[in-house]
Image: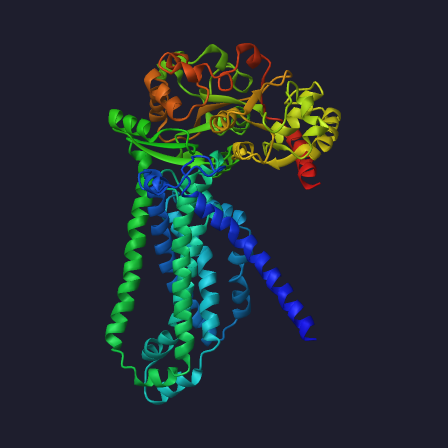
Length: 633
């Protein structure tokens, strides 16, 4: 029997070890790679602190962190005050509708975050409150109050009412009882609730995305948009610092809880001996609420100056763009030259950008949209025509990038950057050439491919293999493509659009269907990687400047576009972010090595065979169904 019990203990220990390993090993890897000397999280290249030092030189990250701390502190303060009073009131008093109100408290907890975000944005829009610091504080307070109420009420459940009754028998007034007896006893619960509200605010992404405004972003939103370009050492370093900060708060909270439990045994004796000055206590509480009101008022003013007042101040420009897509130095040069303040907000996908513009895009003056999304935005009347007379540098754009199907008359867009999707092969792992999309179906590639986590791209390669278009809408042809993808799935090991280069570099995948820029970065880290252009034609993309309908500073937006098209400025952008540049005048100032890289700038004959994506209208539903079936099987 002892032997049997020992076996069970060993099994339990093994089970615990596996569970904790799954939880903590990824965190340990993240921390270790935050000290990696390589820019790519694939192989260890040496120890360094430089990523931590660079964090504090990145003004966008520092600003986002400051914003997050401010919003978290203020929203936690307000939600703690409201939640504590609500918890005490609901615990002590009985009133009609209390059960219903009790149930409503759980709504912010159980409702999906995306629903909460959209609902709050619609609410603020109806009240004409411009999104920014104020709306973030109000939103975070809204979903935090319920958590505070629940935590404080759990502390009240163990509260001994006889202490209050004894105080009343001794002649104490209700307010005096609350401050001298009730408040000290539930203080650990209040602190725990406030810490929970603070961490919830610091961690929020979904709700913040909808209610944040131009020029005011939070740290989680900044990180989320940066991840589009892969998990870099800077993100690892930042995540490590956030982990240390959160862990410190958790340990502090646990210490207070332990201390509270220890003191609970002698709480009656301590409370009876306590002598608290009532007047001083009232003054402190009043000062706390006044401080909350002052802070909220200050940030109300800040938010209005960012949004509502910004419309009256012509020296403002609100930009909505991908993260890591425009150097800060270029923005600073524009601000210095024209004395216009640029509020720069980022997103991580075209769909996020569309959702934000549909919900309240009139605050943005300029956005960057990929080809097919221009179709969607124009059809939904979300963008307006650009006055090309205000953009004389438009002549610097190559003719092959103008008049494309998504804007045939060049009325709504100005090209910014472009690129493609290619096939990359680690020749050290597998000796094969991929000259056609059909080669990806070769059985010797079983479980060895990393491909884009992008339904249009992956369904598109099946369509191209069959001789159809990336923009096919015929249901019968799409059914054929679906059947082909079912066969291809055995070869697919990883779906990854954020950083597929990592799997190629570290040898996790031998073949990849990846973005051209990712392939270039992979080749820099691993010379064994070779790029192929399938003969059926490339998947091409082009990002373009657009101006949302109702943009408050349209002239400033056009001035900004013209500034970015100056050859020197455009060349500087390409130096920082080496995507293919449509500005032919800027090519004269760029280094030959970049221009000669066939992955970034494929031969013109290859480009002619490529396709840009178009809006598929109602057929998008069919693509969604095919993609869901592929990913779920």
